[in-house]
Structure formats: C-alpha cells, structure tokens
Image 1 (spheres, rainbow, N blue to C red):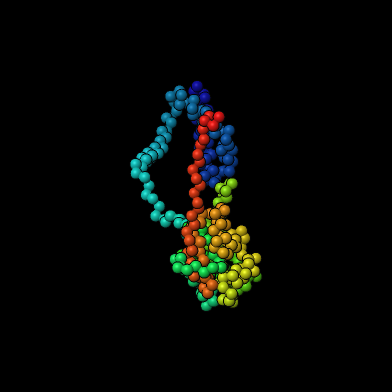
Image 2 (image 1 turned 120 degrees about the vertical axis):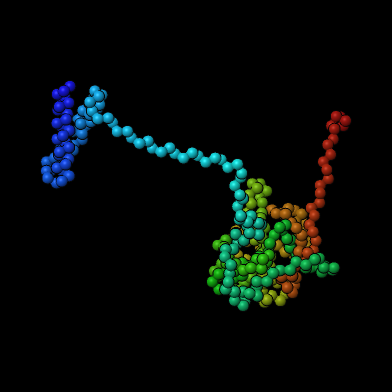
Length: 290
C-alpha cells in the first residue's frame, strides 16, 4: 500500500509539473501526460487513497437550484377576444372582394350606385320581367374597369378590388356592369354549401327596349362572367316564375321582385313567396278495413 501510494504521488507530481511547464511554454514534451489513459490511472489512484482514508476529501458539488414551482391554474376563464364576429356580409365580401378600390373614374363611379327595393306597386303591369330574391341575399355590382374588376357592395356602398374568384374576363368590354345577388346554395343530396352570385341584370344605357332588351344583353355577355361563382339568373313573367320557384331551389326564397324598364336599379317587391303546406298524413287502421 505504501509503495502504491509512493508511486501514485510521484506520478501525480510529475503530471502537475508537466502541466505547469506546458502552461509556461517551457517543455512541449509534457503533452503525453495529458493523454486520457494517464488521467484514468490518476483517477483510480485517487479513488483508492480516498477509500483508505489517506487522500484528500472529495469536493462537495453545489446542488443545482430547484426549478420554480408551477403556476397555479387560473380559476377564471381567459377574457374573450376583442375581434368582431364574422357576419353574413363579411363572409360574402371575403369571397368576392379584397381591399377597398380608391381609383374610381367617372364611368365606374356612375355604375357604383345602390339598388332600390321598393314595395309592391298598386298596379302590376302585365308582361313585365320578374325574378326572385334569395333569403338573406346581398346586392353586388361587377364593373369591368380598364385593368381590374370592381366589386360594388350595395349594403355598405363601398367599392372593392375583385377577388380572383369574381374577376371578369380580360376581354370583357370596358365599363360593362352586372347586377348580382349573393346567396349560398345547398346540395340536396350531399348537403355541401356553395357560394353563388346570381346575375340578373346589366347597367347598360344603350339598351332602350327595357328589361327584356337588357336580358338579351346579359345573355350575350354571359361568357365573360367568372365561373363557377357567377350564374345567370332567370327572369320572365311573374306567373311562370311562381310555379318555377315552387318546384324547388337550392336556397330559400324571400320574395319575387319586378325589374323596372327605365331603371335597372329600381326593383319592386311583387309578392312574398309562400310554399303551400302539404295536408297532414292520416294513418289508416288496416284491421278495420279487413
């Protein structure tokens, strides 16, 4: 044991001297003492001396500070978000429009006028064109500007840049304006919802034949409408239209509106559509019949 201790102390002193000389740059030959195998021998000797009670005591390592205690759970719910809830109008705008349009020229400004939905007139002329208004719909006007498509919202009287889904074709005639109604169709089989812009009239001053002439103009320009968002809405005799509506549509109907001959922005509420209720089902006791 004494010989082992003697050899261990000599080896330790030589390593310490080699380290000192290496630090001061005196001897480069002391580098082999830093090899890993030598350090392992020194550590084993020190451990043997500590077990015999002859070596220096092991230094006490400082304990790492304990992690902070977890925060207590909140007893009150977090405050609600201050953002406004989406509305049907904001949902429609997010589909057909982007940012506000600020470069309105004179011709585009004339097309950006809100439509008027007036009460039913006292006398309804025969042969007038009528169409239907979906329940909860909004009026929009698509206007072809020089290098863009302008979407005018009648509800807030604001012009916007058209979203990619609502842009008219590039070869569409300039200043062509289409009156539309926003609605959401529901598939009867799958229940899938699809946004739609029902195009039912045009703002064209060259049409002097009234609503019927504007209908012909609309069908001629239908190829410039964006698909599948825009659909040409049927307009015609209100009696035929009532039967057509009762046949079923992919969206609920609020009323029938009449198109004015002199002003396409003046609409008349003709009637409120009421689907006739079916008679109640009567169950028959077959035992009495037999």
